[in-house]
Image (cartoon, rainbow, N blue to C red; front, top):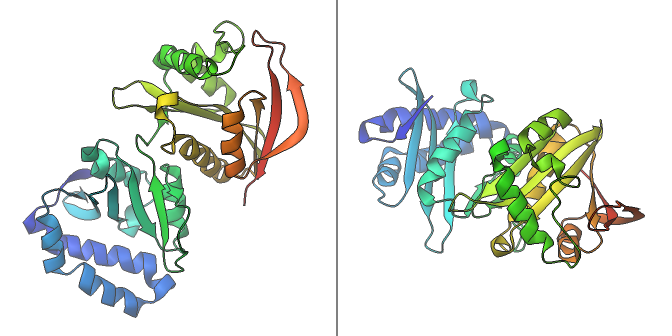
Amino acid sequence: MIIRPVETEDLPALRDALVAAWHATYDDLIGARQVTAITENWHSPSALAREQAMGDGSFLLGEIDGRIVAAALAAPTGDGWIYLSRLYLVPDIQGRGLGARLLQEVLAPFDRAPVRLEVHPGNDRALRFYRRQGFLFEEGGERDPTRIVMMRPALFPPRDVRDEDSQDLFGLLTLCFAEYPGCFADPHDDLSDLREPARSAEKRGARFFVVEDRRGRICACASVDFPARDTAELHRLYVRPDARRGGLGTGLVRLVEALAEEMGARRVVFWSDTRFTQAHRLYARLGYARGPTTRALGDVSDSTEYYFEKALL
């Protein structure tokens, strides 16, 4: 699929693609008649022309063999956020990873600013897709039965770890451990998996995600593996102190949960050092319960850990 900006001559074919995508997505949810009325308004030639003429937005299409098959539209809202108002693919190209490519391209001009969007509550496929891309259900405010508001923190999306990230990861963990007396980042025994993090994750059948700051340095990470068929285990959740309070920790946990559900897991479990009280408050807000079990690691930091668990819906 070729992704490029929308041109004026594209608008008639783009309208046809949007109408097809809307009927395929929403006919069963709101009825074909209402879908037709909405597309006559939102996807009229004049409406698309206004969007195409915007100076501060990102309006892209995807085409395969000259046929327009996808469209995406994002623009700043004036308060530091980006609003993703459109991301649609015609039915016959869905499920190939093209939506993720289009999402990445349409948001690229905005330097990984925080993003909001709205999803119909019955559009399960879109909800799963956006959760995999790091979007969270926005908390607070009144619940609207016709739409779900989702948001993605600044600096997302994460990427899979590479072995050359090792030095950055040790630096990240050293900064996080320094907040707690007696905690040390030991590259030889306790954190030996970080010497070749990608290779180690592959051997364990794990996914290891990292998030870069705007200078290209790793500022957050999280890993997940699957020790049992119905269980996902969270590891290595760390956010650099200066990158906190922007939703990165929450976003990484939600990403792990979405992947766990996709893999058929019914619960997420993990162990956390008893001294990491700030992290424990985050886990409690996200619905994790601390169990009565503890374990002593006998490591260089003399760590004792609490057990946490959350059932997935």
